[in-house]
Amino acid sequence: MIKTIYFIAGFTVCSIYFCLSCQSNKSTTYTDKSFENYLSYQYRKDQYTGGVKLVPIITNYGVFKVWTKQVGNNPKKKVLLLHGGPGSTHEIFECFDAFFPQEHIEYIYYDQLESFYSDQPNNPQLWSIPRYVDEIEQLRIALGLEPDNFILLGHSWGAILAMEYALKYQKNLKGLILCNMMSSMKLYNKYAHKVVAKDLQYEFNIEDEKIIKNKLDEQEYDLFLNKLYTAHILRKPIENWPDPAIRAFTHINDKLYIYMQGSSDIGVEGKAYLKNWDIQRFLARIKVPTLVVGAKYDMMDPEHLRWMSKVMGNGQFLYCPNGSDCPMYDDQEIFFNGIIQFINELK
Image 1 (cartoon, one colour):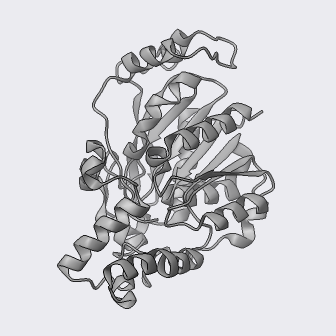
Image 2 (cartoon, one colour):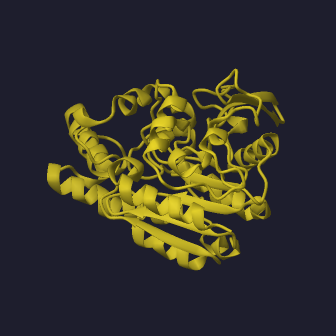
């Protein structure tokens, strides 16, 4: 739920996919097994945009467009990616380019309304979970995603939306993947303050109250933020982070983020929209096959995520022992092997 790191790649995906296909001996599970058809745009008729579509979303305050990009063709495996934030972008998922094409998994990048590539009406009346869930359903219909192929993957804030979508529309889903998000803000705050913040407090001898209330002086904040992000967000020294991850900071919609989450880097603040969000008691209603992803060094308690997978009617748990809030970067092998296996085993 914190400001996760997002980035944009500036290369041509098709040429990379071709190279990756030469390294893979695996074949797809759908009727037409040629890799050429996975790459072909003739089935989608969007060859002039490289898979990019601006999809109109109807709201009570007007019609706005959200940015999407479909990669590959697979009529049985279509993964819609829900980014975190709130107010971040699809860019955190760009590393999927190195893994999903080899498995012939179709995936869809998507910037939620108010995020960088989509329309930004700057209207707080649109900043609510039910409205975003309705946006996902409108997007599903527009892109032709159906119960026999629609897999929803949410990361951080995106996993909140994925859970809420499943509670309302799980009949439309083939599978659900929830990455790095607990089911209760109260429990998230407790873990973030008592475990993560305490560790940093002892290291820097900073008063706990100053951390929780985001009242650090400039020097304290620089030390704290650097340690927080390299220990719990993406476990690499800042100077070794991928350049796109660094640039992604400029794409975060701070107004939306602060409204929903608050300005603190630890937990959800008292007046934030998400402060009281809690769906623990409803998790058992989710019966669709679900993979819950947790990581040892995340801001989210991995044991709570393990519990979530057991409470759900058809849940599995994937643990990333070297990962943090972005295990797609700092525990890639475990993360992608687990997710790909889950997708390939869906019936």
